[in-house]
Image 1: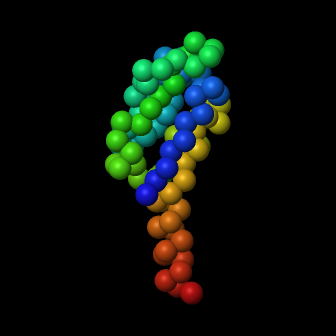
Image 2: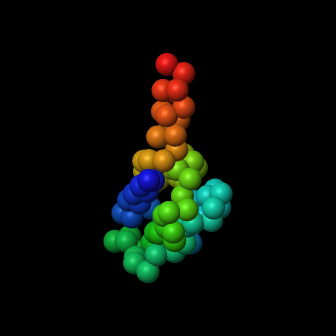
Length: 84
């Protein structure tokens, strides 16, 4: 299972940035209902079960506010184990 951690205090928000919304191939990011202490509205994941773990959001986030752990890496490891 993929785990996506959004560090809301590091995020410039979906209105000022929103790169995560555009780079997610599944369109899983949307605005949260909370505001961080800087007045920005960070994103939230709409349906984590649909996340592929591609890490696009983490790679392209200019604020390093998203950390992805899970499914994508686990599948790579499983494929590597088959050849050993």
